[in-house]
Length: 425
Image (cartoon, rainbow, N blue to C red):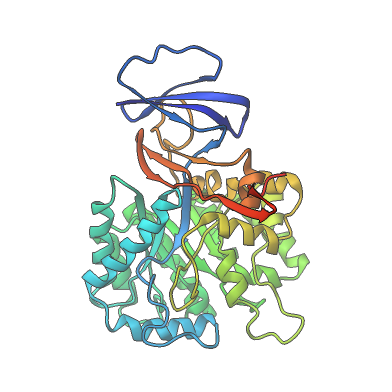
C-alpha cells in the first residue's frame, strides 16, 4: 500500500513537507505546496504540523528482569548490589514462559512509545540459559513489529562465576548479537582485564558486537574503560564497541580524564548513559555532598564521541519505576548533565535516536528516500517543544504501516468560561 504523510515538520528542514511511502520504503519527500498525483489507493495521514522523526531507540535495557520489582522482595537500600541480590533470588523462579511474558509486556510499552529498535542485555550467569532461550524466541516472534538486539550479559562475572567463560561462548553459539562483560564486578582488577580480553576474543571469533557494563560504580579507581578503549583501538573495531554506564568517570580526576579522552578519540567507541538509573543507584555510599554519578556526557559529546541515553531498567530490582518512555530518559539526562542550553535541548532527540542507531550499528535508518519507511509523528513543533511538553507519540509507522497511535488528551479549565490548555506559549 502507498501512504503519504502530509503537513509534516522535519528536524532538518524548514516549512511543511509531504512524505510518500511505497512498498515499505520512503519514496519521495517534497514540500507541502508541491502537487502530487496520489491516485485512489494512497492512504493519507495528516501530521497536523507535527514533527516527523526517526523512531526512538532503546540502546540499553534488561528485558529479562523487567516487571519484577518487589518479587520476591523490594530493593530497600536502592543500591546496585542489593539489586543484584534481589535478582539472584528472583532468577531461581525463572521459566521461559515467565521471561517471555514479562519482556513482551515491556516491548509493547516500548512500541506504544515510538520505539522500534531495542538492545537488551540478557543474563547468562545461569547454567540453564533460560532467559537467553526465551529472548531468542521472542526476538523472532516480534521481528515484524520491533527489532531486538541481544547482548549476552554475564551479570555475575565471567571469571568470577563458575563456568562463566563457557556459558558466554555458548550464548554466542545460540545466536546472541553482542557479547557483554562486567569487569568491575569481577573479583580482582586482573580478573576484570582478563575478562575483557576474553570478550574481545569471542567477538572476533563469532563476528559480534561488544557492549560492556563498564565501571558502574562510584569508585574512582575503577578504570576498566581505558582497557575497553585500548582493546578496541588495537583491534580497529571501535564503532562496534560500546561502554555502558561508565559512572566511575564522574569521579575521575581531570588530569586522568584528559589522558583517557585521547584514547577514546583514537578508538572511536560508543557510550551509553542511563540517567534515570544512574542518578538513582550511584552516590549511595556518599554522605554529603552526594555525587550525581552519571558519566561525562557533555564532555564526551564535545570531544566528538558518540553518546546515547537508555533506560537500563523498567520496573525491576534496580529501578522500581518506568513506563519505557524515552522522552522521560532524555528529560532526566539533560538535567543531570547540565545540558540545558537551547541548542542542547532542541537537539536532545539525537541522544535517543540517531546516536543510538550508531551504537547499535544500524544501517537503513533515517528519513531518506530509499530507506525503510519507519518514522514516528510527535505533536510538537521541534525537539525542544517535544521535550518540554513530554508529548506522546501520535503515530508510529513501520514499513509504511501504522504500528501504534495515541489519541491526544485535552485539558480544560473553568475560570468563568471553559478554556482549553495546551501548555504552549
